[in-house]
Amino acid sequence: MELGSRRIYTTMPSKLRSSSSLLPRILLLSLLLLLFYSLILRRPITSNIASPPPCDLFSGRWVFNPETPKPLYDETCPFHRNAWNCLRNKRDNMDVINSWRWEPNVCGLSRIDPTRFLGMMRNKNVGFVGDSLNENFLVSFLCILRVADPSAIKWKKKKAWRGAYFPKFNVTVAYHRAVLLAKYQWQARSSAEANQDGVKGTYRVDVDVPANEWINVTSFYDVLIFNSGHWWGYDKFPKETPLVFYRKGKPINPPLDILPGFELVLQNMVSYIQREVPAKTLKFWRLQSPRHFYGGDWNQNGSCLLDKPLEENQVW
Image 1 (cartoon, helix red, strand yellow):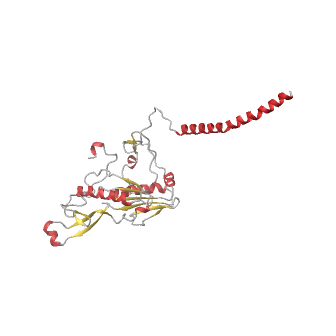
Image 2: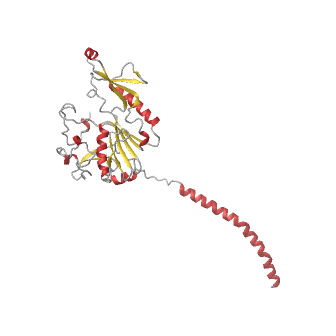
Image 3: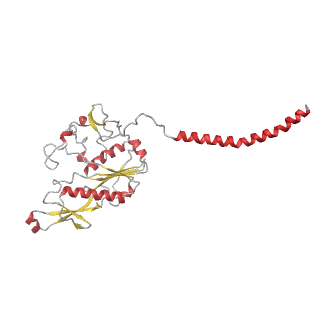
């Protein structure tokens, strides 16, 4: 027994040495396994199930639904333009008009939540630049947002045509009137010159110079929405008072007609925006809606008597 005890005693250190040499290897193997499984978990799981298509909000149709919720605001909103306050001016069929709702083809479009929107835009500013389409949109937008902050006040700083400040969220939303986007100014002619060809004067358009109303304010905004279109027509600039286009301070020769001039202005304004507006600013370009006057144009006693959207074949 004593001899056996000594033999048992003498073999134990060798086993301990063997197990101690295996321990680092086991730890290393465990770490490698953990690393392997973590890499597997990080890899995206592939599936044969197709992901849903991206939501195209602009592909859809107008749907009439008398149960559509009514506007969030009424005629008392202080941001209304009096002549365009359809609610206060008792425009006919307002209930019918407000029953139309835009529905995208492949996805849902929930109603705007002014509290959620202003919460997401807290400490940020939204700017609209362009013609009356942007202005009219802005007015309705301000009235919607005011539901979430009744303490909102009018704001016309930084050459803004109109706007509002929402102190509860520290958000400013404003519109800068620049109907052509580019700088333009009236150049009168003498009576003798006007009598010769009937041209009373011209509007000089510098195609490569933004209008003064927005050229120095873009850094103030975190979101900018641009538009232009309805002023580019002969109803606004007839042959008696035409547009004359300049580039780098000199007249463009041969002279451009109004639509090629519009295209050139757009090219230059987009180039300026990409070059000068801060990269962090979210930028949108809003297209124009079709005219929908009845019985004449806006300056020919035309009226907006329609109470439903234009059909696709009526747009042109």
